[in-house]
Image (cartoon, rainbow, N blue to C red; front, side, top):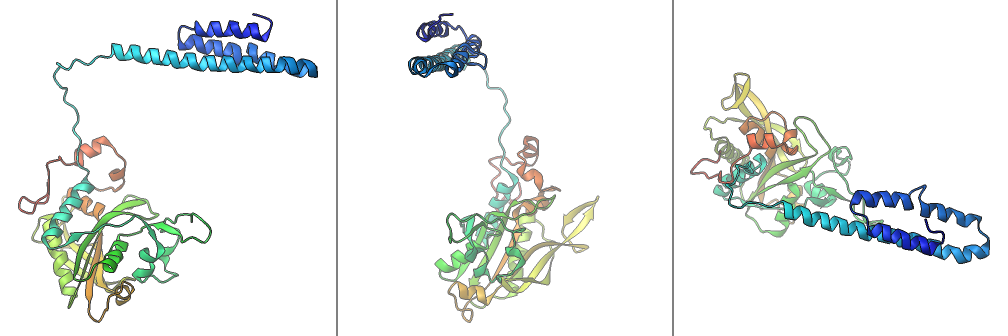
Length: 360
């Protein structure tokens, strides 16, 4: 090996330029710049030199290290490019060969059910409304008549975001699509008939709950609206969705901050070979929540509750899909397992229509 840094530099640059492949280049890098490498050892001698020697030799030694490092990087880039060119030259595709049968993509059950719901409610005169998934506290809670100390505001239910700056309003991931109702009532004049499908977020995870899930809510604002209108709408919707005329509903008094009166809606089912089959009234299962829009909510949106009334309801889209298509666990909806998607997925042309049946 040459003795002076300048002579070593010429020698190393020549060896690096002659490296035939990446493996040989890596060996040279270790030999020069590794812990026991020649250049590394030369750098360690700086501590043993006098001040005058360091002033003379230091810049030369550092220039040697820099030159070797740059040369290795450039040679590696050249070898990578040459290897890519060689691989592209080898890997040719014969376009005359017949196309091999490939797995086809499928429509996710959630997307399919959302299309089915939009088709059903469009026939009932409902428009589809959307809104942001990152919401402020007022639209998500306050305008919906949630008291400041309501448990739903707690951290164990709601995903709050850190404020961007001190004193800024704290944002959150919406816990329901009800803020879409608020935004609609504040920007549109009644009468209003909308559904609000979309993703919502809550801190929960088990076989029937996930931190992110899909929900659809409905809202009607008009004059002289009663619970009878609500019950008829839900019965018509569920009979069309499940494609059964024997769907029976039972309304139970409940409590939601944003509706008064509030009702839980149970759907009747029978047991067939150990599985729940919707229809009849042998057994009951809770399906969704609903009620008449609370006067405080109407007032918060600038509507006179003495003039306008309405009803609202909400149900999980994932749960509807599970009930209709025989799924018993919510978690695979979000696992991305191709086997599950191929089994439960829908063809691209399985477009739901009321005339042809919303179910695929």
